[in-house]
Image (cartoon, rainbow, N blue to C red; front, side, top):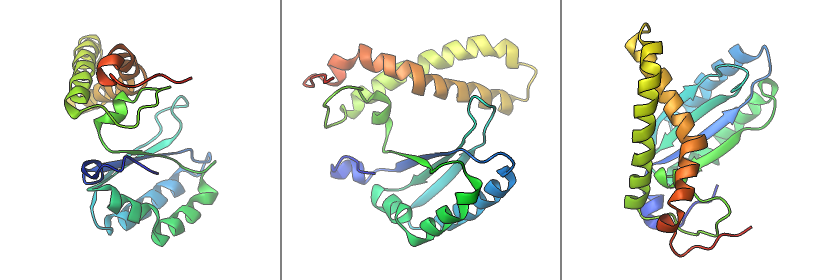
Length: 194
């Protein structure tokens, strides 16, 4: 759970993305557990909210919990707390395997370069620019393709579906490709390692 030691990074909002596969038939118990652990997390200093994404189908069978804290130090207090450990132990009969936890401090995670020895993220303006290219292109493309298909749905549901698709495309396909395309600009002094 280590991140860049730069003070500016440690003082910015941080997100933990936690994914968990629940045992078949234990979903109701797990969702009750989620309510309890979410309430417990809210009691900790710096808690900025939690978003829970339920499984949609067999392609994405896990629950995804997006937990936000105002700074890395406060997230660590929660993640290492006895309270959280007790809740994690309670979940053991409900889940197939331990949680997968990723700590994100900002947009720089979208432009991380696989196979690189990069110690520092690119400057924020570069990260923001490349992310903007990805977001703009996906919003336009997905909007044009899905608008006719989603027109009969409630606007909020249609928007939720299209933004979910945009985020998935960005995270898994678009940003890795843009990062490779702009790698020399994002990481001008970095060497690729094998």
